[in-house]
Amino acid sequence: MRQALLVIDLQNDFCLPGAPLFVAGAPACIPRAIAAVEGFRAAGLPVIWVMRRHRPDGCDIDRARRALFAVRPFLCASPGVDLVEGLAPLPGEPVIEKRRWSAFFATDLDLLLRRAGIEHVVLAGVQTPNCIRATACDATSYDYECTVLSDATASESDAVQRANLDDLARMGVHILTTAELLARLPRRAAASAAE
Image (cartoon, rainbow, N blue to C red; front, side, top):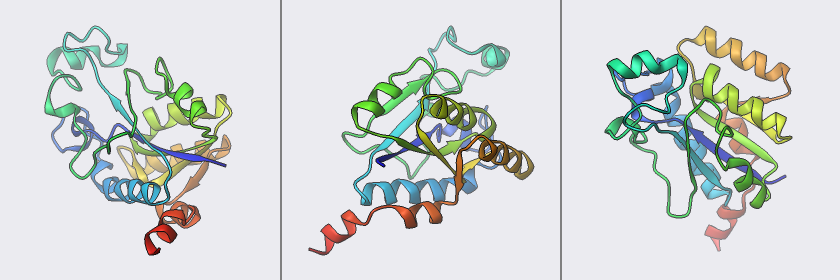
């Protein structure tokens, strides 16, 4: 079953302390997300970057965040929209821009995945109760196999993280650590490198 890694919202405005949408668990998950990216690339499997981005006037901000955006704009034309240090798409790796929780909502992600023959999506990023959860729910609704990396995703607290991962598991989403997932990836690239 062909897999793709979706790296979701690992952007400065979510991941840097003091940023407007800082997720407390984000800094700890970044090294695991980097490891997942490296593992997928080494296995010759697709990495797809999902980034939240808004128009500078805020006309596309979701209702829940309009008041915050009016006071402190975020995820628009500023360094806050950039991926955190250590993460960057390689040439040819798709970047999906979204404006709501789910990576599938009002984007061409489903088309991209189906064209690439992807049947299983693996999710890394922030934050678990919002964008990870919404993307996982939509993935299962579109009949993709879905895995959430427990240590390459993050929430505001460990309790919130555990509760959301437990809920997702009860919905049929696979919950694995990054090491568990990487151990299951094909070894194609490693064999090729040895030749």
